[in-house]
Image 1 (cartoon, one colour):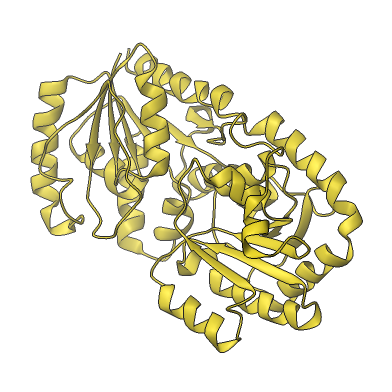
Image 2 (cartoon, one colour; image 1 turned 180 degrees about the vertical axis):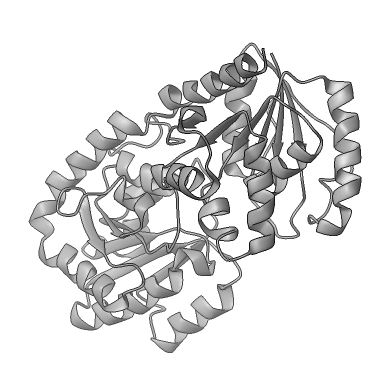
Length: 371
């Protein structure tokens, strides 16, 4: 099978998907819609994946160039002759593939596209609707996305393939040396970890504010804060305002190889995301046996059960998040059981090698639909 993988940019998730596809018997071609002007950790396209030059991919996406993109995408389709186009996000890449008239379209929702980005934007909602109407199979990572596709866009349930994108359970596992604690002098501290992007949707500002409240009551608390984003100055100003420089470690971006050691250096993982699918960082934390404190959005509730894998707090509620942090510290005797439950859940639901097979099934469904 010849597969054209069409994505917004080449992020860590794209790298993982294309690496896995390169190890199949299929021929893999890749298109990227844009190149964002911020610096990412270096990522290599796997041998066996051919990146195709076209009208997009070298600069930020522009709606004003839609006709140019579609015209050149038709040229690419004629030259590559794909059996399937795998395209996402829904309202950009899949929309362009639909405009180009390609029939065997596997649309991959990134969850945030139809759960967040198009939610209050009628123009983007129309592009999503157009793309989904012309999609053979819809692929996604969480039930919340599927519900939205069915209820709002009337997409047929029997043409949705859901699977958590999962993690490498051999790389992300509980046993290992938590060397960061020693390096930071935090061996006897109680350490939280947050490594979501510093964007409004992920609520990192809420995490910092809640931590500032909790640490006033329990001075032994510490926070590993990784990531960056458009709220960089806001987050750093908050850390300075609350005088948290000695209690919050700002780690920046971290490579995939170093991530397991970061997880193992924490006692509890935090996410205050306001919208999310099946978060890969949450699954990595579970695989490393980390209890979690999560906002009560649907994507998180598919993974974390309160008082079994950790604690759940009402989305956007700073006081409740601070209270959950304090509860995690005062209820430390529960952490061992929560850790075991977390790892068992990851083994059951978040095995990347097993879950990836569902994507290949989606491709087969799209081809069968066209026959």
